[in-house]
Length: 143
Length: 126
Image (cartoon, rainbow over all chains, first blue to last red; front, side, top):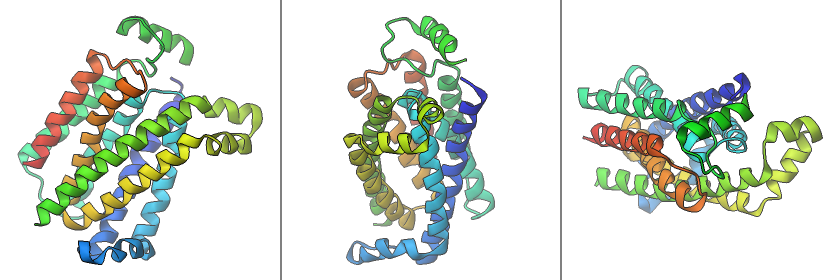
């Protein structure tokens, strides 16, 4: 793993989080979309917040595709999990949604899960070694 | 009713984005390391190689379904429930799908992580 690759993973976290938050803000402005009014979903893209959100999600997608070209899906996905912590903070401080103690605990567990995966090897498929050996191989190739 | 719509949307996001993630990961593994390809052949070669992979289009289509399901869910539920619930349950579904379809070695480390995330999601939903 090089510094640039960690930057790409950071891009996945930040772009998806900010993008999702902008989308949410736009959708709150539009109000509830009902099953009888599905055209409302198609018109949603004309809302400026939704448009900006989509642009950021495109940036996320570019980083995501780049990461998937050199790392396992099960390695890359948790990188966006750190975004849950960011989302909760945005929901709490920008949208003033209440966050309970149990929800904070959930966030902590998700963050712990991310740490578990991030500490392991980034590529496993094709290797028949145990975890430690795969890690050595991965570090040797990637660094 | 509001909750039912939100959870139905979350279910749709999980199914569609797991299918999308697996297809896209499969495609990008076939393309190979894009930063290497970019250095050697330039941006157009990268774009051509990615867009020329048929499973990539399928993956993007599945992601489109997931995206609109998410928009639908966000209009009914709270941001701090819909986004983490759908995204991290997708993470668990993806761990299963990646080991079956992509032959990734989802070892003890990644299963524990999947369980931690799943537990976290349940806590966030109550």
